[in-house]
Amino acid sequence: MIEIAVSIVILVVGGGGAGVGLAWLNDRRHAANARLPKADPKEILATRFAAGEIDEAEFNRRMHALTYGPPLQLEGTD
Image (tube, rainbow, N blue to C red; front, side):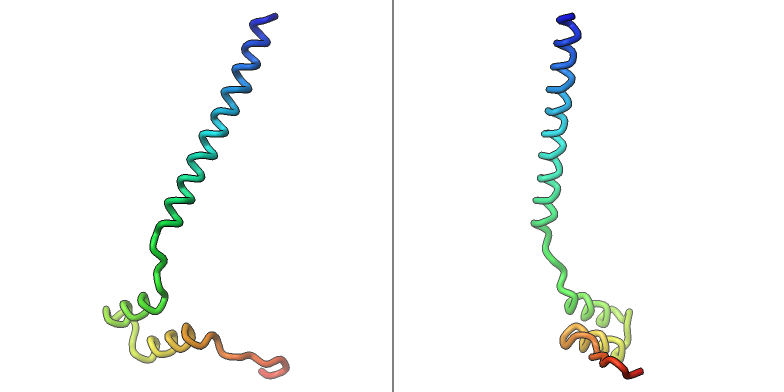
């Protein structure tokens, strides 16, 4: 009978230890992601324009949207 009780205690403690380990790993992953530099959308757009991926009209349209936001849509107008 004592063997069953000891095995249950070991199982619970082992499961708890695994949970703590997983939580620690998850915290480390989030901390690593937080240290990554954030990409600036305007710089990405300028790089794509400089590489010839988009033309000047597309660059200007997207840069305007990034700077001033999307066009205003009024209700009742189509």
